[in-house]
Amino acid sequence: MKKRRILLVQYGDYAEALKARDEGREENYRAQFYSLDAVDELVQDGECCVICLDAGPYEVLHGSYTVYAGHYEPQTHGRQYHKDAEIAAERLFDVAKSFEPTHAILRAPGWVLTRLGRKLVEHGVPVLPLLADYFPHGGLKNWLRNKSVVSLLNDERIVLCSNHNRPACRSMKAAGITPEKIVPWDWPASHLPEDSPPKELTHQHPVVFYAGMMLTEKGVPELLHAVVLLHERGIPVRAVLCGVGPDEKQFMDLAQELGCADSVDFLGQTANSTVLQKMHEAQLVVVPSRHEYPEGLPSVIYEAFETRTPAVLSDHPTFVESLRDGEGCRFFTAGDESSCADCIQESLQDAAAYAVLSETTEAAWKRIRCPVAFREVLLDWANAVEHGTAPRLLEQSLAAEEGA
Image 1: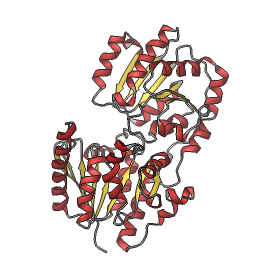
Image 2: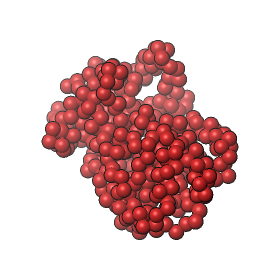
Image 3: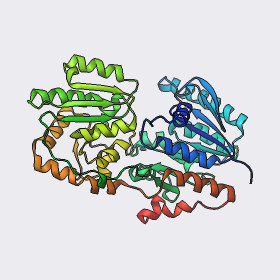
Image 4: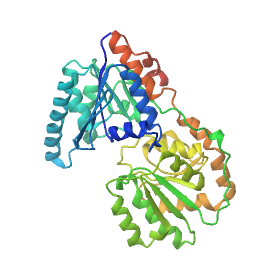
């Protein structure tokens, strides 16, 4: 059989991740090294070209990997953004053509998928869209926004497309993508709720914990404002935030302006083991994503439930579709700092209700689990395109699962 030449396009610093794994360092986020191992298995004795969209610039050789990074993601807006995206797609395609891939895996939505994906498909390269993104749908604006990606993903030359967990997959169906080829995937469980006992509310100085990108759209400003409101109500919460991102300095400045800097810890990039430790120590995990953020089901929700820590969640469409208020979590109105503060306060003021929330984290965790793992999608798809057969995992497509 012809050796595989895998083209992988995604966000993140892949070369640094490979180096960290080889040096025995801790992973920065859930399943980071698992995903590297899965791609290793896919590549076998072939070669892999990885294009990092938001790192670099650099070109690194690492064993059978060639990793390119060149800040391909456009930083402009409006019409200029679309022009820059087309230029970036041409740059990516030039790299792809020189590598001559036998398979292409695109882990980025938007312009990468619609522009580069289309070029690859038209040049006969099998493409696997492997995403973790919610597709806004409904209304003319979203229809126009989704038109190109729906057309591409419904192309018969793309035999399978996969998205992280069911709500994100259902959003693809709602946008117009045929559900028979949509397969929900998940990360394998690294910890189980049953490994930790349910929590009781005993702390006089409660800690609320956030882990994720430092982005305004992730709702971090609402959390900081909620801390101030809670202090004004005589509830001395402390907020611990892990993560990096373009708005990190802005959030630090905001904490100073609000006068809550002494009650907020910004820990920056943090090893996943430390994130889990901080969750164990916290009384609540807060995930305040705004509706406009194309959120799937972030790992922080899984990890909150695995540590038996109740979660305070915004009413993001993905969250309310997947979970039940009062079962391991409570919901507040996204973008509303008062609602966020109210939800935290209510969760911390009733010890009996808190105990129920912690006890039911296991049921909530089971509710959001999917049977198909990331590794399975890669290997099944590659085997299918090489043998000209339908992917076996289509038996677990969204259509099959929901009887659509």
